[in-house]
Image 1: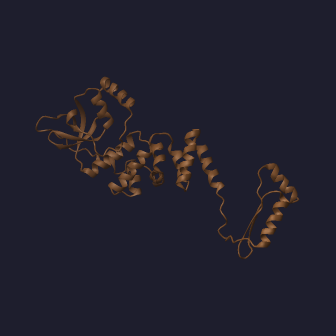
Image 2: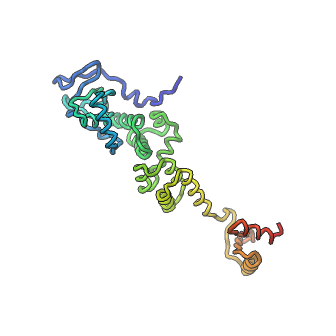
Image 3: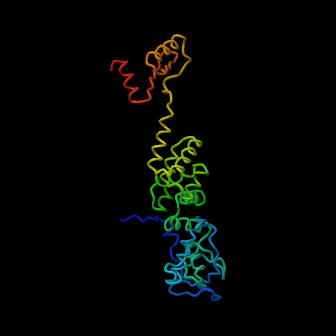
Length: 292
């Protein structure tokens, strides 16, 4: 059996209630779809998307003028003459631009928490949210609807690792989150930046990504270069001040190899000798000295 991608989320929450008619004839009921005056509908305060593409809204409005509303919006009744939008805000806003006075709608019964969950899940499933908006919607479902990550995954049809990857985006500094929100970088870029420990380094790499218009692969390479440049002393070697004899040996080796030799040693005279080289030719020169 195929798994229901919405789990017990939107499908259950939007379970059809009985058709509701208004005692004051504000609503006309036709085949369980209600024609509601546009002016009697309030926008959804739980709407996770705050910015809509103006060109896309105008295109939808033009389509509505010709074709009408193909898919009804969903509302809940606040009182006899006032309704609140649950889902379909783009259709609602475009309908107003198209000059419609009424709009087809399903009326549902929902409390505030159900309103929030329905709005969030409906947007995640149907709207073209950017990665940051999805991450913020996931976080709201967890914090405001008391969902665990596993339950959230069931609601939106995603596995836990996918949910976790989105939530990690919220740990990025504000500048990078803004770049993700404004589509200056993709989620792939953001995931590469998350792996950098220090915020200053994250911002430095982010700046290079924007300046060079780097691809995700180039960004990942840049992050690897940053990590490789930070060479740490082995955890089992406690570096101690060099004795006079070791300092003299280090100086002799530097002269012998013609490059800066670094000796690290602990109290038990255990350690390492590093012989750096700057090119392939320099490496061959050192190998010749070592008789390799």
